[in-house]
Each structure stands twice: as structure tokens, then as C-alpha cells.
Length: 115
Image 1 (spheres, one colour):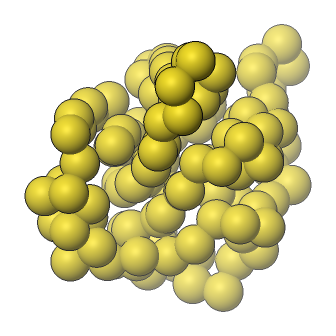
Image 2: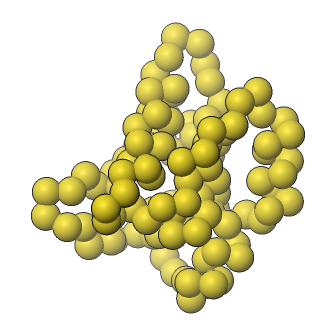
Image 3: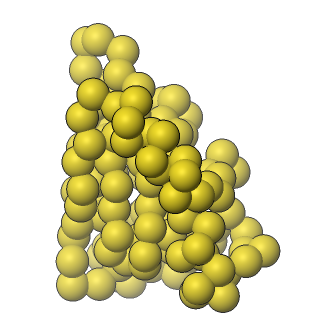
């Protein structure tokens, strides 16, 4: 399980690296269950049709690719609400979850990495 907190675009590449690691895990020989819980400004990564800065990686394409490969991607409900994004258009397959769900994922995961 991976958690990320930074915005999709800007000075930090933490979210970008979390998405890259998730993709690498899904490409390993043994099937891996990959779950991403996006909190704080990372919730923006789950939104459709974002304008991205010139020359930047395309977060929406990365998220869609992960979902197509079987990853589960959940956005923190409180963080979505706090940013006024309730009802925003999500990338199909991205869902909204709670801290209780994050707690359950944490307890049931072999490894948890935070970005």
C-alpha cells in the first residue's frame, strides 16, 4: 500500500514517484495487490481533465494506466471536502474513501510506504 500527500504538479515529485513505484510493482513477475490512498493535495491526482504545465508528466494518464493494471486508488473524503472538490469529476475507477478504510488497508497490508 502506498500513501501520497503532495500535489500532482509543482516543486515536489513525491506523487510522481509514488505513481511510478506503483506501476513498477504491478509489472513484477508475481501479482501484487497495489493500493494507493491519496490525501492532502494528492487528491487532485484523481480529478479528470487537469491542465498540466508544459513539459510535465501526465498524471491522469498515469492514474488511468494504474487502474487498468488493477491498482485501487482512493481519495481521502475529508481532504476532498476541505478543498471544495465534492462532486468534482473523478477519473473513472478512482473512488472516495475514509480514514477508517485507510486504517483497514494499513492493518491488512504487508508493507506501507508514504510519499
